[in-house]
Length: 198
Image 1 (cartoon, rainbow, N blue to C red):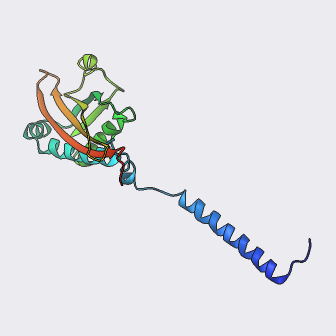
Image 2 (spheres, helix red, strand yellow):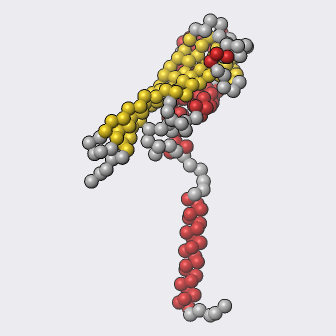
């Protein structure tokens, strides 16, 4: 290996140190935990994890405030709830409805400190099969996700897209098919696409 002048050796060492630091910073920036609420915030009008979490929290609060469900919880414990069919009626192909179902169930179970509910989940239960599979259940929890999508031209040549996603849950009594609780929550988002700014 040839002997380099002192200044060349120093320069070479500095280059190696800087390269090592750059690689270290690059690997550090691509690893580690991310904030789940930050994921999806740059997806325009699509559903984010933050949307799912906030809607699930509101639904659980609504269920806990229901006087009818409160009476049922007081009369028997646990109340056996079959997780029925959840319909995805939106054009958002990448939206996984099971993310919403999982979050609702997790929120309900975490809030149920007295053991008032026992949830029965038998995979995806079609609506027409729910009654036959509800043996032993007192209630059936079902849901639906729908959307309204509006687009209009903007003065700058782009397009304004406004999407309303509606989440609906319902609890039906097995004995007589009566809906004893239902609630809907809407999340509205908008974005401008294709605009040319001068």
